Image 1 (cartoon, rainbow, N blue to C red):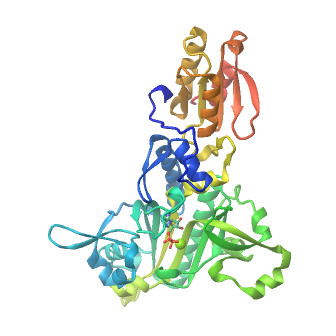
Image 2 (cartoon, rainbow, N blue to C red):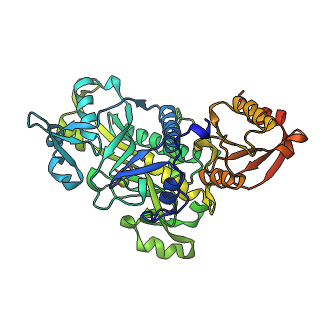
Length: 435
Ligand SMILES: Nc1ncnc2c1ncn2[C@@H]1O[C@H](COP(=O)(O)OP(=O)(O)O)[C@@H](O)[C@H]1O
Ligand SMILES: [Mg+2]
């Protein structure tokens, strides 16, 4: 992409409405704009990151055996009356009336819809287990939308739903999702800690929240120090095997949200206990037959008798993750994207637009880098170009100027470490070019 034509409205000044660094940087780097309280436009740069996050989430869901579908954002109130949650959900639910005076709503979550879908289409235990998911916009009329995409009213969520014949099988599905979550966050460069959590209005008795530790996190969390040092990134997982030992290992140490604190254990932990703030990026629940019973999701079991299916639901805050990533990866100059989710891998800077040699070298590199390059081909001061590239935080900067080119070299800067290296054009292409 050429910056001269790219829709990237960056801001020089810090926007006063933003209280936390990720919100400030997303506004300054031209990634989002608010259009109503807690509702955002995703500008091209921000949308590219959102799609990359989404793709990692999708790949790890698929790897764990979940199947993607897409349910609508608008739901019928009748579905929610069947489960009994229509009244319980209260003011967080955006209720809509259509032209025929039918009660509709903008989905805050999809347990009811998927349970009805399952009930109407699956009749036998032979079709179990099933894990279905979608990545879809949700609306929750939060009392206090804040911190940008961190707590929006409209936000993108990945939500999965599992269906099993009995509790033991449901636990296996839960474990699959548990591990898929660990892999998902690790791939983005995030250290997520699974915390024993309250089940809240979704109900049920087994639940974990996945938190990224950050000072700006909204939740108080309490964790064993070992978790903070844990590195999960290089672990490989065999989904066809028994995942319970791995899940036990990852939940073996104390890690809880405020609601689940245990004073006795905390006293015992002494200085091994760390009190911190966390950003909840994922939340998984096993809730047994809560919805299947209310809505009649029953299959014929092996002996022909009807069995009410066991369910779980599993959410990831896809749009919130972008805020969490920036909270974890930034410095004074701007965002420092991990490669896996960077909007572009490379920022190409032409220090002397109009100089034949610079223009030609840049065009060659631009073609070689494919769609992972943002080329600053504007007629701007070098200082402004550097500041802008640092702000948007692409992992690599390739800087082309007349002086270096005279000896056949360009400069390559790593955004995270600040290290700079002279390289020949052909080496840069060999290293970063399309394969
Ligand atoms: N208002 C919001 N804005 C952005 N992301 C959200 C919001 N509410 C929930 N999420 C994300 O969706 C995931 C699943 O939501 P859930 O646990 O059902 O919501 P909550 O924790 O608010 O009860 C959360 O872990 C979080 O990452
Ligand atoms: Mg939650």
